[in-house]
Length: 121
Image (cartoon, rainbow, N blue to C red; front, side):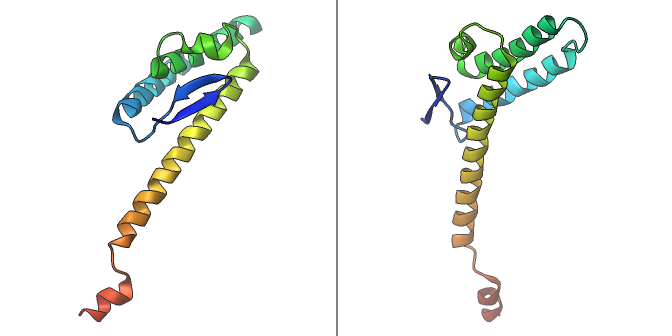
């Protein structure tokens, strides 16, 4: 369990947990679909709302219904949405980086180096 506080809301973000990974992957598949359908022309207010709703669905799909309401106080603000999304992605990327470094270190610990392999021949 890895709790992080984003915009005063505690979120359990654990990129090493299977259940979290499944929710994350499905949510991003949906985001990709939503992005394709996002209307790029029209009134600025309509575009802003649709854009923010796209990310609201992402957070609700990962963390449960109502999470986006807590994160954004029910408002549609592109800047705030991008700030929260950026912070979330930064946390996820950091966890994946740490996980990969730890796995590489563990694998290298039990893999003899080249000189040792040659010496055994």
